[in-house]
Image (cartoon, rainbow, N blue to C red):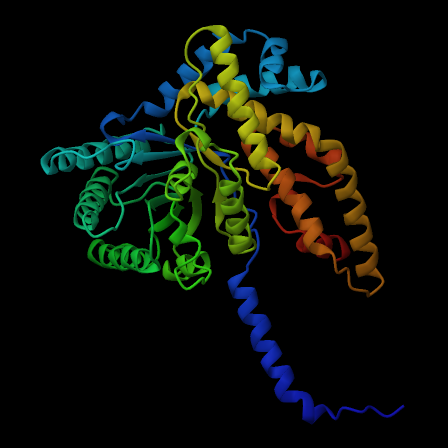
Length: 431
């Protein structure tokens, strides 16, 4: 049968489509398979020392041993199913001894407050020097950074000065290099131009200090309604990412600032308020597939006091973590060492509860995709397979699942899993 559409007639449309597909691929590169932390611990800049991470681990482990000396009590406090209690408890204990903090942020904003310029200057230099020392001595968390003050009209000069002093001191102390996975966090954004200004400042600093272009990464905090939609009703979150010019690696939700700026009464504010769930969903929509991590907010109930009070604080924190996990958000803030056991307990139990169905589904997907490839057909549900692969990568990296369990669970080797690419695994099996 003769074709209706001559190839030459549709060529311009096909060329437009090709360019659009290429632009989409650049804008939505997907998950790279690189490690994603499950929390960020914030601490005031005036308090940071080179051994802060180690001390957090010691305090977190002390809290666990004092208030939940066995797996049963820990599981009961957090609401973990009995079948997973021993495994979760053992892995949390190991994590607190081995790597208690995955991501740490030295804070010059809410956790620091407003101080005399001379005092903030001194803390910017000393905190950076301590971070450099921690880096040299292998005491730093795998991810790290610092939060400056906002770029609002009255604070931007102070913020830029702190940034310059901190980074200059850090490079001097660390011998000219930056810690791995290092970021600058920008809070309380109201217009994309504030992100543009930070990107411009980082451009200038990199040039002045001989750093590779784009080596300084940033993260944005979503704490205002204007960071989601402007007064014209336009969606702002994608503009924040574009304003960063490839530097943005994460977006953090500031739940209590976000509800406060909407005149929600203090007594009604909370982690699970519908306004915050709206913000979470908008952030997920804006950044899904871009490689920008969505990071959830903080639980402001600190587990301190007697046994009952600590258990209550743990349960609240664990429930908040599960609230985020159910919405596809794997990372959130911790403010106190005693919150860290609850964070890991909730995350680990989440992965263990989903392990059996995820293992079977991934096996089936690998088999189906391989058969389709061998038959010369197209397997068009690779995104689902990639999502399940990411589940296992996240579980391994945070300590919820031992790497040696992977072959038996999924039929994949660790070498295959570490490629981070479902499509690459299938192609490798076919070749």
